[in-house]
Picture (tube, rainbow, N blue to C red):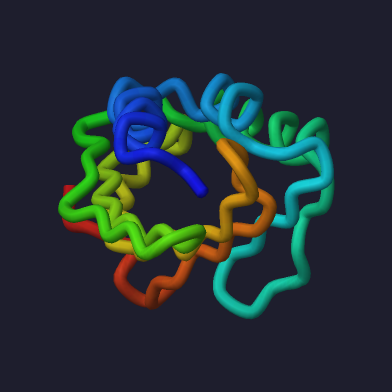
Length: 123
């Protein structure tokens, strides 16, 4: 079960835009991560690589914050707000929930839930 301090540390990484580093520090070796109902990306290395691609796409990170955090035993839900401009000039706003299952101090499963239709934001 994660401690509140451990979850706060994860939030701190993400709020500073340290997405790949967060996966390296807080996720299990065999983690499964998915967006909505898409097939999962399996393994920490594969997910770190995916996040590096995401970070490379970000031209400007306007906002990255946890709106709220709920901890219930080994389950954590974080309401994330991410506002960014990509290298293609498109501005996007993610308003999403991250539903996590922790074993000890590591995340073993995470699912991001959001409405893809809300990603476009007027520049």
